[in-house]
Image 1: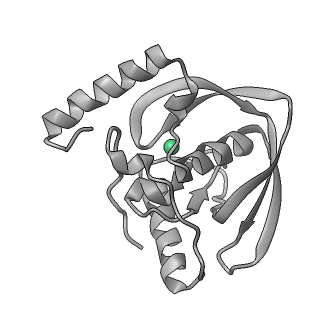
Image 2: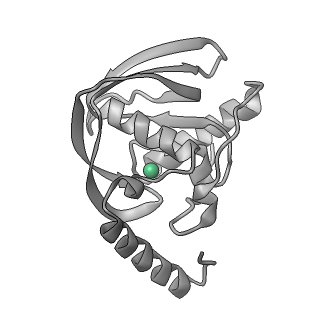
Length: 174
Ligand code: NI
């Protein structure tokens, strides 16, 4: 397993729409393992493949608390098939937008259909932090970031800050 470098705002790669995975083979499982290792190392509770520059519909999660036994989850081609009307608010962050947090409102409960790492069709009913985290990561697969759910004023401020920081790093800015 390899820890991969993370793509950071405002890299335009984060705005790419990821494509479905057709064959679940050892390469895909290796990618999932690399993503889990990268996520745990960061540390974070979720990571989409595009955040390490791979535009495929694959994400990993582990929403267990510190000190609890790890419970890594792998979602391939995840699709939200139900969203509840009631909403919940969580303070979200993102490994691609380090050290920035903001409250985001999303449906409190969702049902997601996906393929597991063996290519088996699965369905999960999620609420609480898992529901929020899944929606955040599925957004990544569609080129959407959590800052797209906050006010334009706040979003512009964050993008400006990260664009300036990217220039200092010598990274390409949008
Ligand atoms: Ni994120």
